[in-house]
Amino acid sequence: MIIHDFTQHQSVLQQFVAELRSAEQQIDRIRFTEHIRKIGFTLGYELSKTLPYATRDVRTPLGVKTMSLPANLPVICAVLRAGLPLQQGVRDCFVQADLAFISAYRTHQDDHAIKTIVEYLAAPELKDKIVIICDPMIASGTTLETVHEVLQTAQLAKEIHLVAVIGSREGIAHIERSFPSNTHLWIAAIDEHLSKKKYIVPGLGDAGDLSFGKKSKSLR
Image 1: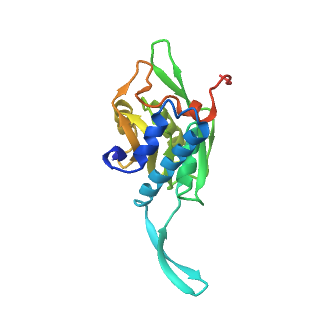
Image 2: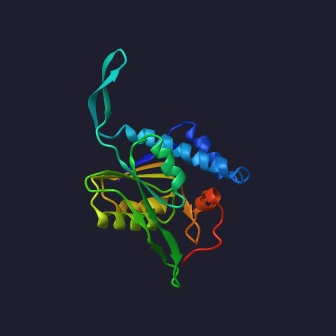
């Protein structure tokens, strides 16, 4: 796996992450989701530098300009529901890209193992496409592993990019074993630890709840 760790770069991106982490500022839900969107845009911009490009003629009112433009637009997949603001940020870079959506939630088993359940997938043609998977938090890595298995069962992607806000060392090591070696991970911050319940420490909490409100009911 090719890891693009933006804690190694001094930029305003770390200001966005710092404000996401702040318990005092997390109560502003609109600001929280907007910061995740900004991180998605920033990582999407950096990701765009690695994609294949082709020259095309663009006609202006005064003439024609040959420009280098993306050869193929990616498919941007959000892991529901927390991945939606991140997906929107990435899409701001690729405004005509197709979108995909996949549900995934963790269940804790009696033996303390974690099982990820996927119940919903809506996606365009993925075969031979560049697929960007957006999930803000990489804790144990099992959610992304299951998402990858479902997507690959549906259709074989040409190249996979993972976009995340924060990941744990353990989770990143897990997905390194689960994804193809040419997978790219674009991540704004990496934390060292997981709690006993497999939450990132210090992390920032539950990104889905902080973006959309706490879950009180579900079908499961």
